[in-house]
Image (cartoon, rainbow, N blue to C red; front, side):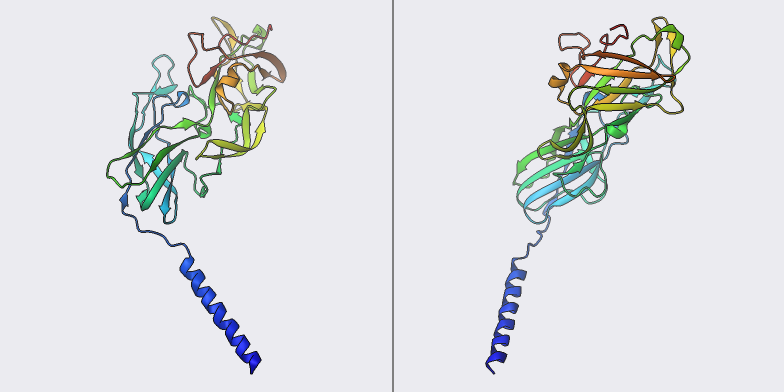
Length: 313
């Protein structure tokens, strides 16, 4: 009889514990109203602002209620690409687009209760449910984009945040200008010897004595911290068997190359980079540093190798 009472007491205690645990389970809070969002993206590599392909992932953290994860948004206005009047077949950004409203492509960011923090990144990717570990593009291999004076759009990554707030308002919250996780490098071609005219450039490698690119890495968009595998070299590849070298007024040269690096710009300006060009199976090598801030061709956000590379070095 005593044994039966003991078992019954255990069962009652377990039921009470389960009831208490259930009462303490986190519960969501109803959304008071949608939060209107605005922002701009005018970093060097993105030309005159938002582009047609841009989509964003948005995270909302509220003091009460479940977080809203990876909501998909799109800019309401984008830059139109126009054909260059000086290079038929090549396209460049048209009229600038600055700060615009961001439009949800599904559930909108909603205000619940208490302090709110909002974070965003681009390009949007499904499955990104942790804003502290968003996968970054692999920059260890990058590709020439025909007909475009810019980096491969697939490698562009940027993020932004809105300062915490606790009062609901119909007025839009502004991300400001999105910050790029990377810096662009522009590489005008060194002059090749005349005998390679008409031959194909099949690969360029860019390297340094320090880490310059991410390979398998993530970024915490709440802090900008990058974690994962970093590399000291980048392979720049060409489609369709390579890029033909042509002889012009200034000798034999290739087109200007555009790539992205994950290195602090200030650090990069004082870094010597080595470039190896593979032409018809033969290697041509040169080294140099980007132009400094005192050079009239310097632009913030762009590591310009203009005049810094020569095979005669």
